[in-house]
Image 1 (cartoon, helix red, strand yellow):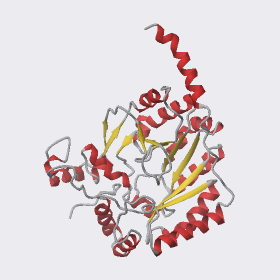
Image 2 (spheres, rainbow, N blue to C red):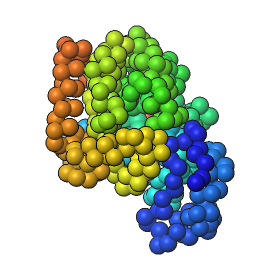
Image 3 (tube, rainbow, N blue to C red):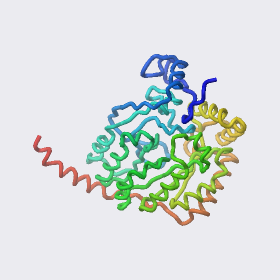
Image 4 (cartoon, one colour):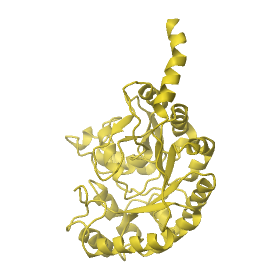
Amino acid sequence: MKAYIKGRCSQLNPANRFAKNTTEVYVEDLATQEEREDLLLENPTTKYIEVFPKTILNKVESPDVGLTYSMNPYQGCEHGCIYCYARNAHEYWGYSTGMEFEQNIMIKKSAHLLLRKTLEKKSWLASSVMLAGNTDIYQPAERKFGITRELLKVFLDFKHPVSMITKNSLIERDLDILKELAKENLVYVTMSLTTLNEKLKRVMEPRTSTAKNVLKSIERLTSEGIPVNVNVAPIIPGMNDEEIFDVVHAVADAGALSAGFIVVRLNGHNAILFEDWITKNFPDRANKVLNQIKSMHGGNLNDSNYGRRMKGEGKFAELIKSQFALAKRKYLNGRIMPPLNYLLYEARRNEILEAQEPQLKLF
């Protein structure tokens, strides 16, 4: 048996489903699946790979998400949450959903330039934009590259609203920009908090901030006038479902204005990775947890149907839903998130374009 890599959730590297065979999976070499996996086990360090996209905003087609555009400055995520739905997107870049998702991080240094180019267009209408929607904008790579901070500067310059989601306390670094955005209702933040159990958090999402620090970030953000929603996600029966009241209570005490939840769904290769992870880390309850997840998704570990996939169905899903509703009534009753302001952008964009005209005439 291969040694367990501490600090990484994935211990497997499933073959890329888009490859014709395993020797065509990887964009960097022609190593076999087994050889590549051995290499990653021997050297579990993170590699940053710059990519050069033509656009940065992605149109969101899913009706469950409730936003129009998302943007992802990074692909792959060193946080390594074992349940993360974004793992499967890594296959489109030629990598695996497993260890490579956590170890090969693609960075988009030109993201702020692409965003500025879009917001300068007279055809652009102020729309709901989420940073990020796929991988975490404040993952460890952000300390090194600062791409998220540069994007926030562009949103502030254009007075364009933006929503954000993260589970990393690094967000506090950007309080200076966030406070300016919040003054004109141009931002709100969603902090993701899965569990208050630090031991479970350490093995389930090893490179995220501690629950204690996430709660501190919520308190710090709200004290500075930045509205905070909390995403209690995913709720995994037999793992963290018994914490619903405790988590909602804790985030309410920290100042959160609202909270929502998502039940776990193991799309694509996530089912393989999660089964391997829970068997190695919690063998005593692995079968129970997997069967309860299946009971919420019609006998499967995944459900891709809009409107049902994030909340599930069946008795466990209904129990989670009712408990969460009760917790919100008890701890968050009367609190509301202020709406984002979409009225300032157009005038500000015109100001920026008018200021550029004398310079453009020189050319």
